[in-house]
Length: 350
Image (cartoon, rainbow, N blue to C red; front, top):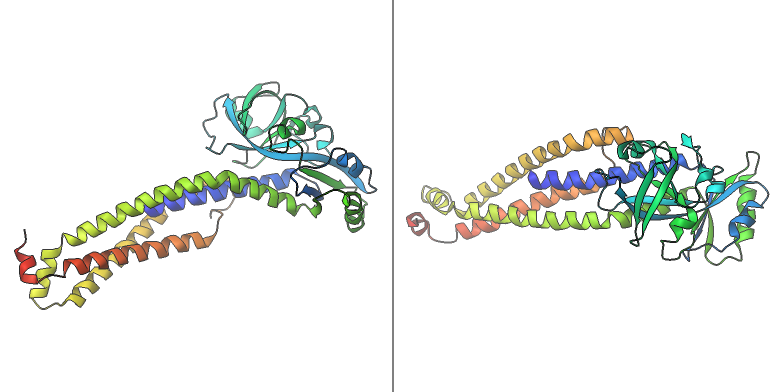
């Protein structure tokens, strides 16, 4: 019960939060095309050339990185910090939904935009000061110039693109968000964008799904440490389960000996041990799933509007299959050792 509830709760907590973040980013961005660079940087001046293409309503350079809130204290911050998106403030209004307060055009220099919920938790308003530590260890002191709406838990942070890019390995934006004009032929616009970027090494023109894929990769890298820690704790839990089950089975040597003396054979005893292991595992998994759902259902309801958490069902299947295989194998192995001797000798053992 403890092992299954811990693994399921922590795994689906991470996948549900990541899914909520991706959905929130998709709603906040109204770009129709995304230009991404395989070299992790776009050429200086490319965004200006893109904006000059017929049918382009607006274009803004962008980059994603990670940041950690230092001040004010953020009790809800996870170990992997927050996704920090650098956006070209002067052109952000063309590719993003309008903020609920402030202005994205003010996003220049030492400034920041936060979600309304995040700012409320931190006690910040327009003009407030946020201290942010970037992924490379640099500390930034920033003034809040805009607030925007987002789903609960999707607390991304917006910085000026040059500020965010300065703390990435390439030190350059790696994405250009492009919004088409209302009457533009998007197929023709896509061809024109490819013509403009044909001479740019590694630049790919894609639809907005590429932005989601890029964010998913960013979240995957950020969650890797959490999954590693979850795996280590799960491994220690498995060791504890194996030790407990094996020890308790071996302690029943005298009970098994008495059963064999009154007519049961080794096969009957091992069959009983196997059935007991299956029943105990079933009860443990059912209780563990119920325990995990008491946490996951309210979280999923708040973040995504669904009662079911987001994540691959195969993970649950793997936990169930692993639990049964581990319990039955351990119980039968220890049971074989317990019935290996003569029942008379085992019964005489204190």
